[in-house]
Structure formats: C-alpha cells, structure tokens
Length: 105
Image (cartoon, rainbow, N blue to C red; front, side):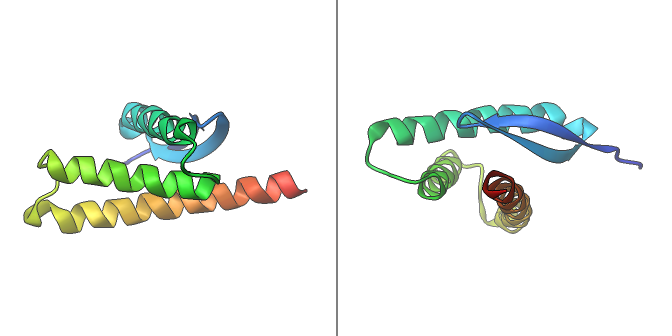
C-alpha cells in the first residue's frame, strides 16, 4: 500500500499554509481546514479571545467538545483519535513555526 503524500495549500483564518497530506485524505484535509477556519473566525469575531494562538486553542477545544457530545469519541476510539490529533497538532505547530520564521525574515 503506497501512500503518495503531496503538499497542498490550505487557508485558515486568511492565511495560507502548505501541509503534506496523502492524496486519499486531501478532500478531508481541505474540509477540515475550512471548518477550523470558520470556527476560528467565529471566535475572533466574538471579540472575547485575542491572539491567533488562543483562538486556535479555543477552536480546537470547541471542536473536541463537539465531537465528544456527538459521540464521535468514545473509550474505544479515544486513544487512536488522540494519537491522530497529536500528530495533526504537531504538523500544525511545525507549519505555524515555519510561517512565523518567514514573516520575521
């Protein structure tokens, strides 16, 4: 099973990021980015949370809470979901760090 991974551009909160993703997960990544961007825009427009990092954390917490309430996360799936979320979080942090370095240079 050979999974081809290519970098694709996603847009989150008016910023563009390059994220490496297997071809078969491309549509899901794009949909996830749009959903996250919408959540972050909603939080930003409320004016209660300031700073992109805090907005991202609040959006992540809200999305995780929604998933738990909807029954998407149960004891059987929590570990694998937590591992996937951790990997995704690491990729997002790496991308944000690269973006920050580019902005500063």
